[in-house]
Image 1 (cartoon, rainbow, N blue to C red):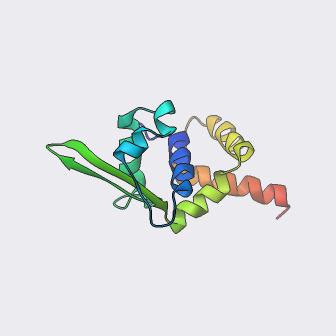
Image 2: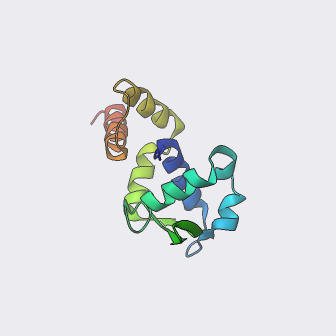
Image 3: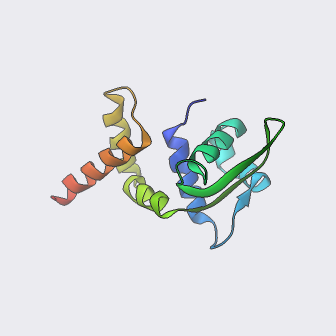
Length: 126
């Protein structure tokens, strides 16, 4: 399954809206604006890649039984998640990042973060 950069950004933005020490579980996630743009499978996959056992961009997880997800959770962004989000938060910056990456076809999340950082540094003259 494809790990969609827009979904990663949207999950980070969503996770940041949660109150301190509050997590969103599957029912709340399914009723959120995320479901207006993405399928349940796409969201679950992204949570599993972004969460505690993988990229660690969010405090989140997916629980499986018989190879099927039965519970999933989005918690707060981790420090790394906050750092990444700060560089891609602005829609203008995100648009520039996606345009630059499209010139080579695709890029990893870490490369996209570096592209955002380079753009921000250029705008700041550093």
